[in-house]
Image (cartoon, rainbow, N blue to C red):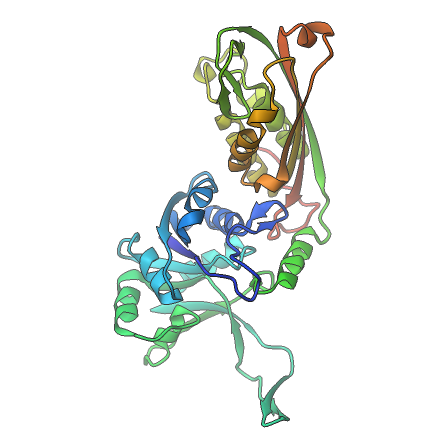
Length: 383
């Protein structure tokens, strides 16, 4: 089963496009992608986006989830149709990127429910009134539901209905309202809020942070240098006359970041996952080490929200490469670039680093439980 995540909207009521707006450091779409990956019932996701957002979206693919990116259209129906073009026949889930806190168990409930169209919904609990010519009249709330996404359909059937219907819609289930077969309804989730206004983003942050214990991890690494470039640092290659010596690619910065992420979850250091001297990790791209650390966090019900690091080196100068390093590290951790920081300093000619014979790095990582975790104190133990 595949999911289509609609993320091409203009976000007029919010004040601008929302797909890449950071929620505690992670773009909104990144939260949804992780939820679908963790659901265990979705093989891949198609994210329908503005063309200028495509590259940033591709970098958010979580482990274990195939990701495709398609261009959006002028209307919602056009964007959904574009997403369906990348999906084969069979069951499909349609989801709004503006609902970043969708719980994986809600994805599973919708995916497993029978019916040509299935939607999650919450019964309305507030008093409803309609403005009738300046006079407020009560509306019976019995049987009234707030409808959420994801919604499940047969892909071919939904394509046919979209092609036959000229009008626009607020959700695809509207195309099924005249059918004799009722639209399937499964219980929604109050955490699955929609980010429409700026105040909704603050509410989402409160949901994620409510009762959560911020966990902080520290990482440190040092590698000797040798003649001959390039230098692998922070996931990029820096041309020059030095490189670091290591069993893997010697990326001292990514090693410190990975240890900080693992430390925030109380997990062992990277040497436990990639033992020194293991032939399987000889020459390994350290990006894989960071991805493993992020995946281990996910197994514990945690998500990174900030990384701050310092590189200590006499050479090269980090400043000209800082932006590229931050972008690479943001991509690896699923964070926005505003939540990844890299600084640099020297040791004023002192010691091995000061003599140019080594480079060291320090890192701090902040993580939080996912909003759908049972409780902030119930971290899933590492097996």
